[in-house]
Image 1 (cartoon, helix red, strand yellow):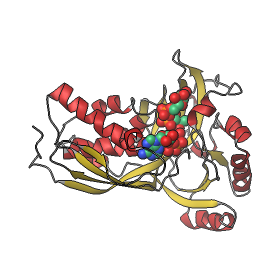
Image 2 (cartoon, rainbow, N blue to C red):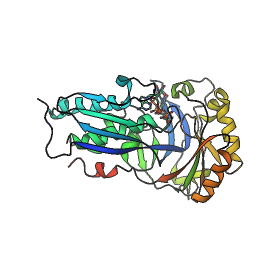
Image 3 (cartoon, rainbow, N blue to C red):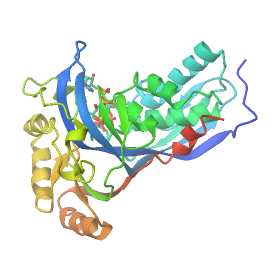
Image 4 (cartoon, helix red, strand yellow):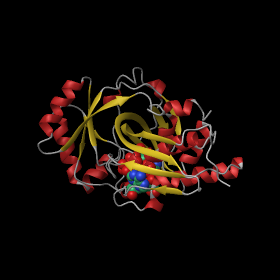
Length: 302
Ligand SMILES: C[C@](O)(CO)[C@H](O)COP(=O)(O)OP(=O)(O)OC[C@H]1O[C@@H](n2ccc(N)nc2=O)[C@H](O)[C@@H]1O
Ligand SMILES: Nc1ncnc2c1ncn2[C@@H]1O[C@H](COP(=O)(O)OP(=O)(O)OP(=O)(O)O)[C@@H](O)[C@H]1O
């Protein structure tokens, strides 16, 4: 019988699911299963989806708002909640009470900002606490990788250098600052970019010790190996990069479509965004060092 846990609140509202930027992204190889081996630095930002969770006492997991074109059963939020429930029962013999989930979706789908992965990570963090499952961060990361390559990063709770398909994470401090982000008017399916014959998959792996001042120079370091293929398939991405390049070093995040440039002051970023916003969907976002829900991870559900 599923029961509400009296040691926990019945709801958690306004839980942020932040966007990430890939400050660089190198493709260094491919696994036998077709997934690509990457090296990337993930930067958290204050551009967020917001999720609201309310416990039910009948064991059901329900999304109670629409989320664009995404069916409820395919939604990474619902898949994350189901996965946590299965693991709570399988590993701990625990029956969970169920949940209603509302989502305020701000991050563009197919934007390269990791929105779906971030929603899934926020769901795992919030429900681990509300349902009092007591999984630690590493256990949540092992569940998260089954939902998407970027989910482990969001569960780590801080900026990171990532290897493997994104699951081997080394926390790092990044230069932070303010980013002008342009969302070109296209949505990019990640798999389409990765399966391109034109993608180069042999960038030389980085040895971080070879790069004194690596972190300070991050906004000029490396490149996004997916950018060439993405701009050939979606010329709007190339146009956005060219526009942003007039003001600084610009590059694509993830598999696109969004492109960004870093500025050290908010005023500078806002001035650039104002000039671009006539033609482009533009936003100024702040780089964060930690995930806003990191406190839930640090508590380990205690
Ligand atoms: C490109 C990045 O945004 C970098 O942060 C991510 O690696 C993509 O992460 P994601 O959107 O969560 O992607 P997933 O949903 O895991 O994978 C979508 C598809 O992209 C391809 N894929 C993804 C990640 C990866 N390292 N190699 C791949 O080849 C696979 O065909 C996979 O079926
Ligand atoms: N809650 C969700 N939010 C966004 N996308 C979702 C969600 N649930 C499932 N998806 C599916 O996940 C896919 C990728 O969405 P997402 O927004 O994470 O892509 P992205 O911004 O390009 O991220 P990435 O940088 O990881 O490639 C889409 O095909 C979408 O249909």
